[in-house]
Amino acid sequence: MHATKDNMLPVTKPEAIGMSPERLAEIARVIDADVEKGRLPGAVIAIARRGKLVYSEAFGFRDKQAGVAMTKDTIFNIASMTKPMVALAALQLSERGELLIDDPLSNYFPKFADIQVAELNAAGDAITRKVAAMRPITLRHLMMHTSGLIYGARGNTAVHKLYPAGSGAAAVVMTGTEFIDRLAGLPLLHQPGTVWDYGFGLDVLGLVIEKVTGRSLGRYFTDNIFAPLGMADTGFFIPPEKAPRYAKALPKYPDTGEAQSVTPILTEPLKFETGGGGLSSTASDYMRFALALLGKGVYGETRILGRKTAEYMLTNQMGPEVKSRIEHTDPTRADYGFGLGLAVRTEAGRGRVIGSVGDFGWPGASGTHWWADPKEELAVVFMAHTPGPIRWHYRQVINALVYQAIVD
Image 1 (cartoon, rainbow, N blue to C red):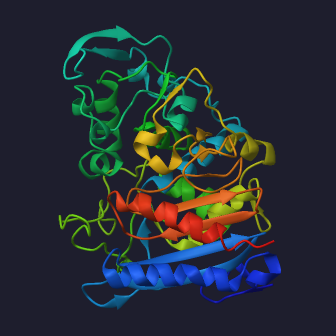
Image 2 (spheres, helix red, strand yellow; image 1 turned 30 degrees about the vertical axis):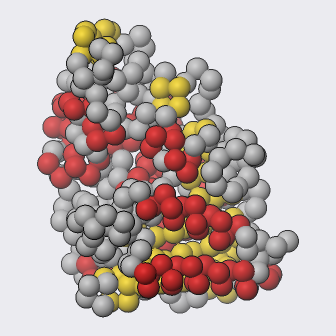
């Protein structure tokens, strides 16, 4: 085992851990062909098995228009790949007795004490009345997308139209205080604890963490996750000296020709550090986080979460009483359950991607993706700026290419 200069992760040969170098070469063939066709600008892919990096490659362009080649240290918007980090941070605080995951949200932000739930007409385009929530929103609801605080851009109902579009859109125009005041004044779409529906739970939880710790979310992450794991290129703001490494999407979506870009632009400061989707990172940085979860809270000699806490986080928490809308958010995670901050596979023969019972992960809307498979001792990070529905295509393609290379 040795460490490479570019990422300092322990590295081994594929054949030493049951993977075929010839089959891994299929990844380059497929991605290079799609770069050539203009399907994606470029990508960085990292694969680890049994705690060692077995594959790490950069493809195509960091900035195709400028002709700048992709490199392994390229920085990407990881969007909702931020969310599992917020859940882990809250669990760290629970381990220290500083919060309980079933605490009511109103313990931290009293304006949520008298939250109401909207009832809609049959078309969904009008609120007919508002009723009191049957139970308080808890921190667990925030981690599981069962709070009823939905993303405005994820539907067309009268309630959706009241909410900000998404995490990035909110953080660009509102401070954390303004954001909390806005959400606390809106009706929920669902009774808390009844429906998995994608939304602002982890953004709100990030602000709870700030209130509990007296630190910005970024500072808490740096002190308790990034620095301990050696994640030197992960943060809510890309400073000028790192800006040249920031990847750009293709200017037009390949299937429709419509203009596209990745937002928010993280070389510009956000008004609040949004736990729902505000981080940028590199493939090797995020691999450290994935390996820490795969290691049940340990990466190398560093423990960032207790073993039983990590097992709890990575176990399905969504019972039959919860209506799941996961497939409406990410079709590639249809039939998955949900732990705390990420999706968890509960059955071997269901789902639209290959894997094992217990595999877990949560992707990003900018095109980035990761998952870990404890049974196969496997972690995969895919970084690309491919916003739009094509990101679902690459989640399935990379999944198939990685698993077909396992030969033991």
